[in-house]
Image 1: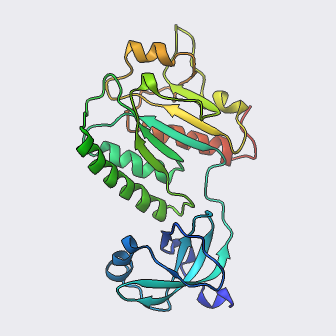
Image 2: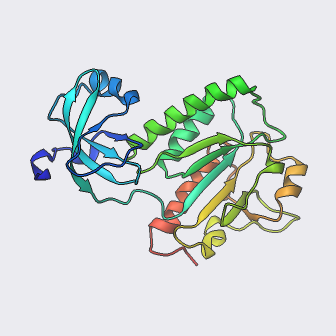
Image 3: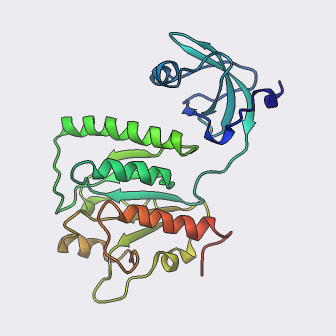
Length: 261
């Protein structure tokens, strides 16, 4: 089937959805139930319209809608070649923030390419949740991240979860851990460009950010052996710091073929 017949005028802004299945050429698929309402009542799509579907193998497919009823079926038309993800996987480690600031940060950090989020209980965290409230918040956070991934044409939906306090966090899964702190024991903190100079494409980076009240002395002592980095000459709010870091990493790894030396 010639995919050009379904090539829309505004291809770059086409609606995107994700499926946990692997899409096979010539085999119709069902849209996830959670997205049916959006297709029918928000976008008001009709049979013959086209969307992007990202499957479990992180491949993007142009798909034609076959039926738009109680369920929605689609037929893959062609594979879309694209590389929207950062060359390195960046996990944002941060505590909960007050009000809507945390949700705003999750949305924008997803747009900027974050690979995952780990929410830890900092010593000076203002927001405290019990298990029931954590589960409810997590459901909302996952929805925000999913929608931001669709909007920004991602090929993955970043994972998010609650962790124990920063003192107990396990960092063995990462190739590099950066501590967003101005300096340790009076030493100058490196810039992100300096800290990332030895990072190769495909490696996993964790960046630890503090709460509104900053890191406690206990946390500073525990994290001081990691690569301390500063985020520019200005003091950033807790919700702004991850966005600055992700933007800087994008500049370092996507503006050129190799990290800055």
